Length: 423
Image (cartoon, rainbow, N blue to C red; front, top):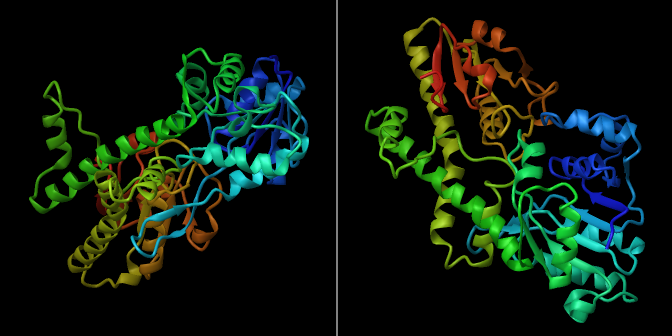
């Protein structure tokens, strides 16, 4: 089949770059987002996120007429769903977050009226196992005049597949093209159609499996990473108690040819590694013991950092007996969940900054070079340059190793370094 019009539902950190890549290959792309401000920004040829090279691609695609954004779905030959998959609540019995598929359901109901026989629907949203099948059920309920893979198999009117994104923020444009894609069709014909679509711009290999395995593959990748980070974070806490430099320790251990310990930090953030392992744990709470423990370790690290700040303030006041806590200025460096991006989702640095601002009576300065305005939870604080923070702060809390922060360090004050670049 040929794809003349492609619709991408959700124009965030994955949806917009994906839409732009299809459009860059001279395919007509309709991007859909419920946020009118996002739609208006894109239709001006601009972008609302920080991602290297994406601005040029979007500008060219919009200028040439291949990319258009709207708030309502339009008919297309293929629909890619890239919407968030948050948690709805916490299970009171076991304390495990409960996945919420409301945005996927909303996307299904939104595109259902414009579906026609032969269309392909791909769920790219990272999802709990079984979400693609649930998507197909919602679509079938909305369009009883069409057949779907769960009932008609290979002969279904509509093709449905799960193809998870596997990209690194800050490198999305390159990795969308070069990375292998896992293609999880609900039937073989669904997989074949999905491969044809992605091969319009993907140079990596399209590897076929079923929908459930494709869902689990993405969750497994991020859970593995989470477990490895948890080891590093736990090691940093142990080393702090034993008065050992964890950065030196890891450097020495990594000299072994079969050891590659990751670097510790203030926690784990983003809408992948901090979230996806819970999708596995929620499905199999009795079996996913190691994955669950890693989540607990990483989720507790921000509170450990906050306690280190309290100790730093106390030590500073002992050394400066003429000052009170109201006089102490704390600077937090970095709010994003990883270096050199503007994404604050699930960011442990954001949580730490919010808690520092809440508990501290004095001034709190925030340094985040990738944003222009602070989120609502921190709007009463001051967003300042690195230079001002270096000059005015007494406590310097490094949370994100942005490249700008690697080039210089404070010359005075107490440093609490969670990334090991100023230590």
